Length: 537
Image (spheres, rainbow, N blue to C red):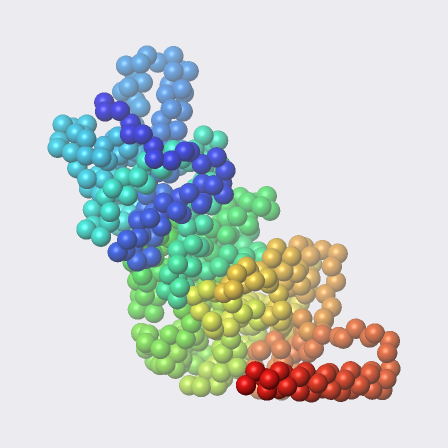
């Protein structure tokens, strides 16, 4: 057996160091590759490293179990390759030449285990991806096979393999391993979304926005659906929500669809890393062309559809258009009606949309919106702050729908004929010049406001009250009077201004005096500058 190559870097010791080191390594791969290409390289390698580590850990556990049963080494050697033993432990079967140890020892072209001539690192990784997919039907068509590309520097690929060899994604139990790898994977998704700019919005929704949807909907159990699931962030955040509230993620069934092949592959890997068994269809497909889940009705729908799509597969006689045919030049209301059509009798949904969707009247959108309101399907509208999405400067909002606002958890308030408006535009903190992020406190306030309005158990002890400038519960009559515009700013009003105790007349006189004094000072400085310039000239 050839010796393991010497690592090019020291092993990362903290999560931050691990993330930063891996990102720097990934960044080195760029060369002539754009962000979307090397994204697939690094995410594919991280996934491959995880499944290999998980396999090795399960293999050792099986050995220990068999030895504990008194079996001999020969008996153990016979039984150790029973694939069902790995699948039963929630672990993918990894063929010998796809295991990380083999890749690490042979990625520099050293003769392989089968006596074959040495291959490039890219050839070895592509073969590993192919063999893993052949051995695990749930991964069919999922893993990237792009590692032997002419645009990929094989030397740097080998260095990245060495770096990952120093990083073990197991050792503390499968849940801990998945948490670690999942966090790394999500970190890369976010970094790649930023690196790709506008194209990043195709696969990534900022974590804060996803959390708003999850915290409001509270998907503790049932069927969760996303018709444009991107890299699967809605599903991952649902799992985290359920676990953080002491629930059982197994009680959540995941259904999704994605039109972009590479994004669909990322979602499949993301679910696999997090141990989520999800149905994303047998392949990628446009939801408007072919619904991969035609008979499924969901308890929860969470989606961030592409905004204002002009070129989409529109059919005027589509049965989903119960509230009016969406215009050919904008798919926003097509997404909304598709999502509503997928809701079960007591289902609810949260949908991220461009702000224009709340008030647009073009192409019959105003009439569709009016019918949605009159059908009492809209439960809450939230205007979000700007710059949450690095991929677009378009201001966004979240629509929440409920098939039946009269029902809910025990003790819920009947909110038929009412809509909650929340103006969250002043929330969030700039994390750099281009991007804003919602804090935990921001998200909690939004969620608590909604749940207190509904009288949900999660807001027990908190009584809902309208808050000027932030939230208001409007009747359908009020919305009709506003010509069915659903912009929160029209309903919540302005925040109350704190009274400083100074009479208004005295305040005006004081401010006027201060302003005139500043004018005088400006005139004096202007004259001084002119005098100095005159001396120079």
